[in-house]
Image (tube, rainbow, N blue to C red):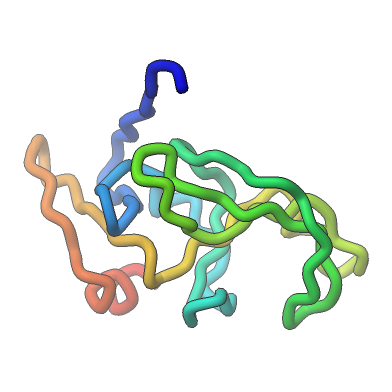
Length: 129
């Protein structure tokens, strides 16, 4: 494997990998918190950085058949959720190109000036989601 280059996000509220604290996305990219992942509650985000995307596969989800690809943290390799590649139902096409991050795999880091303070998942659920 070559040299690992990570993107460091800036903003008041950064969503990170729970395992290694790698920046994944900004809270501003949150689209919906009404999703279900493999491990419980999950969130739909518009963009996601510092991930690798696995192979696409057909998967039957609560809203029907989709083509999705699991996403992994580029630093620690943790499975974080999935990316929507294709939605067969017209009403579900808004998800295509977007990312599911599972609540159990992420945490929110709040930036107060130059000081970062991680929040627990309970605080994440209560404060932003």
